[in-house]
Image (cartoon, rainbow, N blue to C red; front, side):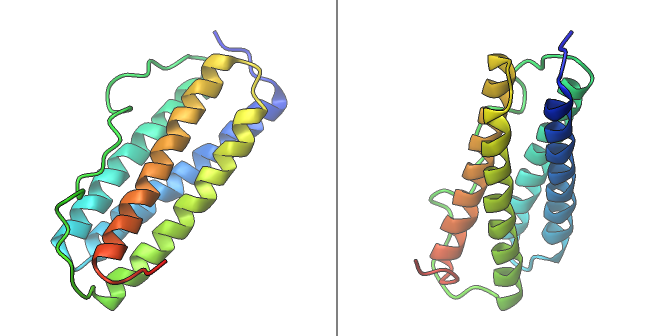
Length: 151
């Protein structure tokens, strides 16, 4: 049984809300995307965000989640599969919003990680943060390949 401090619990509740927003956005945006590849990307990320949400819930319920199952795969289904070309403007707006969201969520995990006493929980949060960064990278790569983002 994990014994969380008030601050740790508050940080986890915040992360849980962020994950809930990510699940909702990715599912909504998957239905709005015009490009089938983008629909696939958003659907895959929605599933991974749901796993993050469930993991946070387990910790809040005093359980130390196992780091197997859906986590650790680093879903990037479009690597090498995106065809270059001009992307749809509405798809670009969805991508911009999700890239901004992933940047924010990754940053909030960074802060939370430093506030936890238990190294096991730190490792779990670090793992989730890495997957958030991979989502951002997947969106970045999609946008770059479609001419939507030119760093």
